[in-house]
Amino acid sequence: MEFKATRLKRVFTVNEIFTVHYFEYEKDYSFKGETHDFWEIVYVDKGEIEIDMDDEKHILTQGQAVFHQPNEYHNLRANGVVAPNLVVITFSCKSPAISFFKKRILPLSDIEKHLLATIVRESLNSFSSPLDNTFSKELTRRDEETFGSEQMIALSLEHLLISLYRDFDGSRRNSTTLKRGMEQDLFSNVLTFLQEHICEKLTLSEIADALNVSPTTLKNLFKEKIGEGIMTHFAKMKMDIAKSLIREGSHNVSQISVYLGFDTVHLFSRRFKQLTGMSPTEYGRSVKVNFDSIDAPSFTEK
Image (tube, rainbow, N blue to C red; front, top):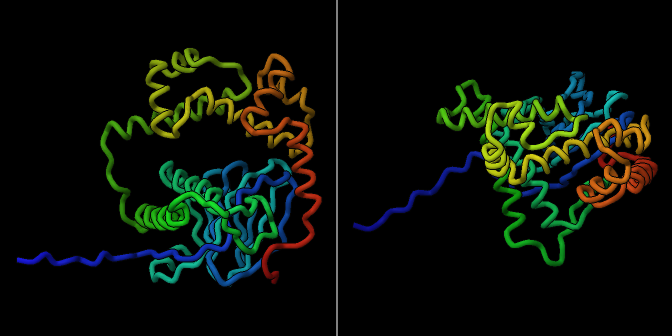
């Protein structure tokens, strides 16, 4: 008896992307709006934003994503208090199931956030176009792109769409094992604890004691969940706050250093450069240069 192949069904097919952005906006940023004939995902990585979708007004908070359908007028603005970080992806998809996402605002799970991060990372491997260029209308391929990086973008985006559809189509979420559920609860509790103590100088042992787990458990949990140590992640959280405060312009470097629990401004500046690639002063200048250059939207205005 001969083998007979089964052609696999494709519920979402993404063959084209237009832009992939990661923006660190100032607290008073405002974009007047645009329309285009392809899909757009806007994800709030930090802070919150206000958006208009045709005649609807919404507030998006950290961890939420909004889908803009083709030819839908949309704009966004910061709330004037917190400097937001956003991921914006524009793409083409003709699959019938994509209509599910019309005007959808959805929270992302940790897995879905990881897929989004993969898209951003693989975009850096594939394209030389700066991710923070507001005017970008086209992606420029690198002369030597990482093998398979563009396919990874498509696969990750399709995976993201399937995962969100499964989560929110009215059916219950896929069941998980008790162990994974407990790990997820612990991970969420740790992140909440770190956020609540972001201004303190904590050790791994102090964090473990506060949460009644062993330091080894925390180390393994963070390596499994996000691929880095808990203390490195805590430091990155502090630097995210620092970057927001620098963009907001309400504190100087010395004040930010004290606020985030560093013994000296020198230690803070050194750690900031280790994790961001530039000093706090250089970062502040780069943000000012980027935003001073903005004088027009990147797509067709309505």
